[in-house]
Length: 361
Image 1 (cartoon, one colour):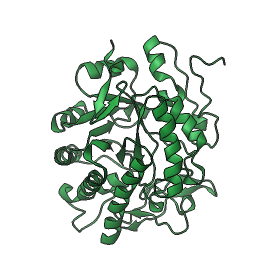
Image 2: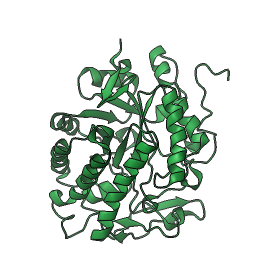
Image 3: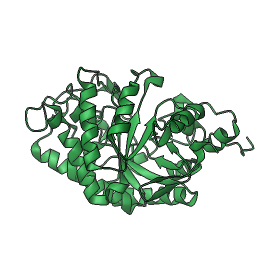
Image 4: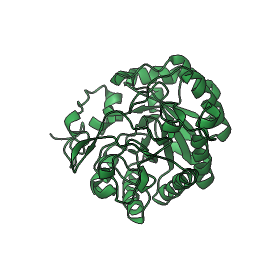
């Protein structure tokens, strides 16, 4: 049997196969609330061994894009509980990706009392879409105070507890793609001169405090973290010393011992290639489960699993457009093509209307 379709374990969590549905922002959570349409969408894709949700904010301050969900209110917990129930009924497991957008935000996408926070007062290049006023320049964020840092770490831990209360099997911390955790890691966004800035030991401190707080809240077997070394999304340029910095982080994460690391390579979408040596470094430095993602098809996934380069493989756009992706991979059936025009638009079009093999349409 193909390794991709064999069962796997993630701590105490049994997975029906080694296919992971990668986290993908879909912007269907009107009012930042998970809803019935989202439950339908995720349940359709329960052929995955593990589903990782779209980025979900740990607090009002963490909201960035229009219509992304949160996990900081009772209504949001209840909304997510319907989603996890629908997915579990179909046999898949589900982790909530906790995402604080940091400087990748705009006040028009946030409640009036929320604040755009970041390690330093450095605006991102480019623009942010808002439903109210279209594209707007990224604002200059507020540099986080020591109290902001303490309260934000606590919000991550609260979000993890809320996720478990909502029925999730665990949480993935979004430490990739230019959001808050990565903003602390990268020297272009972290200009601090206190114990959270300067050396990599200091720049990694916030990330590790969040990891340890979340592990303390829900247990290490329920925690993963996603990283994007060599990623440049959201104004994150490459820099000298990046490989050494991520090697340091890998060693520290081995000590904290979350259940998994999720390494994303966006080179298939035009980003710089993540060197194979970086992936191999994470494989050797971290003894937990390793998930790789980025441009995989079934053949390449099978090859990397067979070679022991990873334990699980995550698929993004293939899962977006093919709710029955596992069955299509097994049978060699043709894949649906994603409709990029509807990736982030509200409603069911380009969301729950992709046909399955059994569909009469």
